[in-house]
Image (cartoon, rainbow, N blue to C red):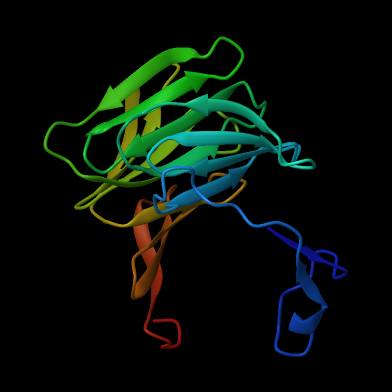
Length: 193
């Protein structure tokens, strides 16, 4: 966890020296950290590993532990902070977890699909789910798949819900969700295509 005197600026070679480490997290079971997410208020920090650790973001005190007993690859908070969405590679389901009750609200599964990433759209009702061979937008209020995109990778959505970016280890592709088409891509340091 880093602290910076730079407020809302891009980190560059010129200002990197102003960033200082304020804390270091080590998994109790020496597992890898696959994902980190802040709640919208920046009060809660979720760390996804073999389980999910929820911390007070200011004090770094453990608030809760969600025991999954499998590697969680991604986590995302609902904008109102009532629900945490998460999923793992070895299981083909996304779980919506009620943070106040400490229980599963809903699950979404696609058989034989390896989950790689998730992201909640700003309205909090639609979840972007990335699989190894496709991406979907799932409206979990109505249990309806709003859109399926023939793209793999980790999804990230724009705040207005109009665009989705899929990323892998070596490329990034941007989709227009309204027109349902790929707009452009970047690969290994290339310019936009």
